[in-house]
Length: 164
Image (cartoon, rainbow, N blue to C red; front, side, top):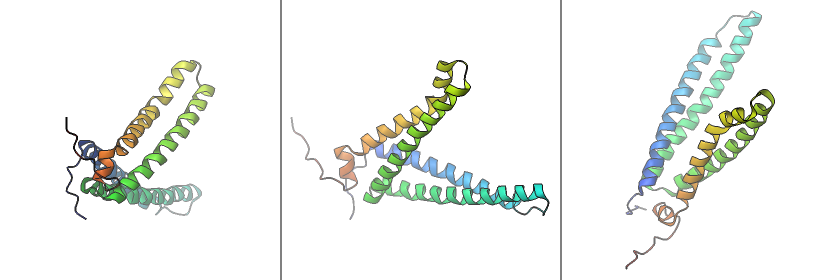
């Protein structure tokens, strides 16, 4: 099905953020896989075994990051083309991201309360970035549920133009 609707500007912005994230994830994954490959080829001494295990873990984490990065690049394409599956995957990833950010904010806040003499300063410093990320994800989630955006992805009937 060809989507003949005009792509909303917000979807373009979300797609650009998605491709940037995908590229960063790919670069991180490549770096970890390369580092892990170098470290896992260590000799048999005890310290070398620990380094080799770290290398193996790095390869595994790098592989996961590569897969996620590829997924983000595929999602970028789907967002630009108005594919319904891209809308669904984006919603799922946003909800997962919101849950992770809420959990990380509460864990970081609890840890900063235990380790900080100046409680207010510690709380503000430890939760600022997770809260910014949380706010961005909530705004994007809200935007993707707007009628004209859902219609672009074939998730809702297009609204007829309003006449005044």
